[in-house]
Structure formats: C-alpha cells, structure tokens
Length: 250
Image 1: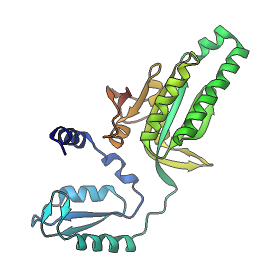
Image 2: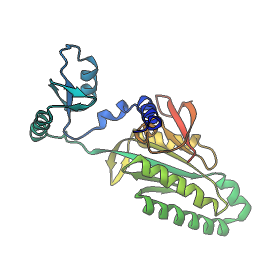
Image 3: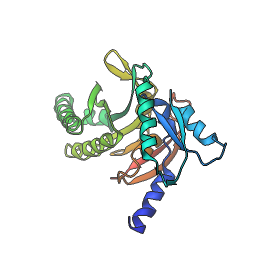
Image 4: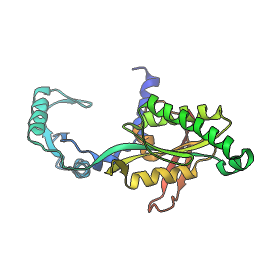
C-alpha cells in the first residue's frame, strides 16, 4: 500500500478498542498465538478471558506480520477447535440500536394545531420507516414522535440515521438520533437490555439534527470513513458508567 494509506491504517488501528464487546462473542473461537519461546502470555490470556469459551493454541515457526509460514498447521488447529466447540446457549445477540426524537415537538404542536400536527407526524413516520426499510433496520417501538430500531451492523445504523436527518428536514422538522451497540436480550419479540437503555440516553444528549454515537460504535466502524467530532464524556441518566460520545458529521 502507499505510505499515506499505511499511515492512515496505523492510525485507525491505534484508535480502535473492541475489548468491550469481546464478551458478546457467541461463536466458537480459537486464539492463535505465536510461540516465540517467551513464557509470558499475559496479554493473550487477557483476551482469551474476555471471549466466552475461547480456546488458545500456540504455533511455533516463522511468521511475517500476522501470517504464519506453516499455514497447514494453522488450518488444522482451527478445524479441530471448531469441530469440538459448542457455542454457549444464549437468548441474546450482538446488535446496534437507533433512537430518534423530534426536537421541539410540543411547541410545534401548539403552533399548528392537532390536525396539522397529526398530518405532519404521519409524513414523518412514513419517511422514517422508509429509511429503516432502505438500510435494513427493524422497528421495535414507536412512542409518539420517536422511534426505536435495531440493526445487525452499526455502519448501517449510522447511514440510516444520516439519511433520516436529511429527509426529515424537508418537513421543516429536526430530529436527534442516538446509536449504541451491545448485547440485546429478546423480550416478548422485542429487544431490551442495558444497551437499549444506553442508546435512549445518548439520544437525549443529542442536539437538533445531531447523530450521536457511543465509543463502542466508533470502534466498530473504524475505517468506514465516517467523519466524527469528539463530544467528550457524558454521565447518562440511569447508567452507572460515563460514556464517551461522538457526533457523526457525515
């Protein structure tokens, strides 16, 4: 790769931290460590401890970067591990949540009246649902003038949010959006859990036409080309740990 591309890639790697979501991995996992003769496995054991049921294997021989010269042994170890492993039974999945909320809805209702507001809200709902369909979002709830949807990947959630913000402006409205990723528990056909609560609280921090994402979403989408603005660390109501938030600029 070109030197400028290499520099950009190194920057992305150095700023990416996915350790927070490793406990959510639910597939058979084997960690392959280069056996260079050193007995110190502190870092490797740390990562292994974060992934439920992860197996560790060490392979000696020459290695260039992340590529082992003895690929046959690597393939054999992975195949043996997958054949023997059983994914932990769980009713949860790793997913992304997106919340929207209309800014100043009460004032707008008071200024235009019930009937006009009902018509405007219907058009708003149509645009939001069309965006969900376009970007693969699943509507989980609709409380008045806000939506809660889930996505398989955070990148799609971000693109959907930016799409919604722009389209809703055509109605003379502004919305705020919050996005988080984490473990989602299925309850009565809908997803719930701490990740959902965090997503809702992030939305409350966002300003007009803002899309705010958590640090987890930032790390999961590293390299996707999203321009971000650091919004600092915020205390979220009902959430024990403060969260680092970022505004998506495009």
